[in-house]
Image 1 (cartoon, rainbow, N blue to C red):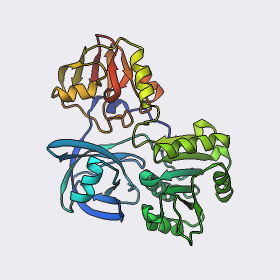
Image 2: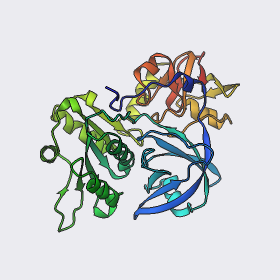
Image 3: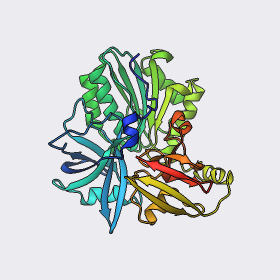
Image 4: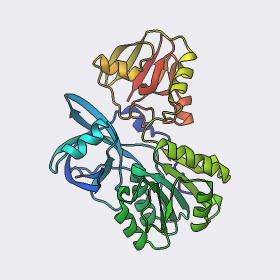
Length: 373
């Protein structure tokens, strides 16, 4: 078969020796999607279009309060159907950039972005025949919409079932657009909304997604069998853990389930970090970083990450999420041992080859040398 079912693809050899590309893009439109979510439309560069895959994200780099701030936002556009690059941003409590963007970003403004990245992707082929079952919560709809557009237009025999959870009807991002795609591709896109707080006349599902509700939902969506079905999810950490548990109760194999996390899990974060640091002697160490033709010696204090230490010491390394998920900060440990708080962003073979993530990496020996780009 010509597709990989959202498995982490290995980096191409030519990609391993070049750092990320940066662009200055013009804001074409800023659209209010809900009262607390916007979509940002960026014009493609005139000389050469930026290539990307559905499910990837853009990193926006903006000076806020005198400091350069980076945040990753999933693309909701598809290279198969859209001229522009479009991301969605939802306000979060105390979110620095997520609140700055809707309050300040204007049409015509130039924004520095880092090239599209991310491995929550799949390859498309006209001969494919598969059923993608999606679970989205809140702004987790963003990469799902991109994948929906690509799958429906590129694979005429594939179908999508979307279970989309939100607080209330006013908070459903892309509600009208999803409805249009459902109408246009009738029978191939099934959208099921689940609301925490449903209005009086609501005909759909309401309340917490539980075992009984999922059982009823599965009765509503087509059953193509486990071989042709893939389950993907993106949303708040609590929702994804809940869905994970429910799918296990329904005997869905783990290899058929794929997730996109916007933030590193907080439930296990402290335990992971303590476990990681306990395996080696915690002390201040010097790390050698080779990047962009230069060699930098960075002092990393106990409990600090390699990336944070480098940035504090004026070494401008590539990064985005700072949670060990996006791989923008990835480098190869040529020597020494590096312990990671979070390994989800790397494939098994990448880890075996010595790749590390500096944003969640701690030197465990005195001879760590990392090559980036």
